[in-house]
Length: 163
Image (cartoon, rainbow, N blue to C red; front, side, top):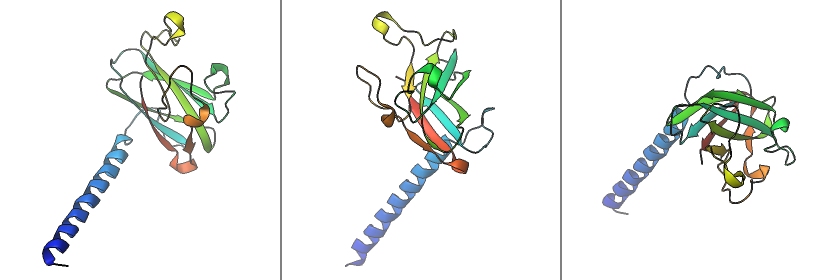
């Protein structure tokens, strides 16, 4: 192998390694935020919501167990939090009761009326999102598509895009 080819291979590998490290650092930085809800407790879930169009109203987030029968049924949620919406990205934390698999459903309560407003035919009138950002067609996704793992001291990092 000539020195030219070897040097090109080494340079390409160095660029790839730097790009990978940069992507990892950017990922870590996305979740390196401060919010009154983030206290560093065990099983803390750091949530980042993208696509918040206006800094009005509240983001309401529900934490659900790994249970198909409970998923997206308000009274069966584990916990709900509400925080001021901030455009273009809203961040906050919620803690799970224990390590394990959970799902989050949230919506931008733009008028802060405490309800997920719906339009004609029951279609959502306010932006919403689900953990893992599953594709949603004509019905809610199964909980398996929304699950993420909360791991004790490491907690979890979840990014949700509003629809």
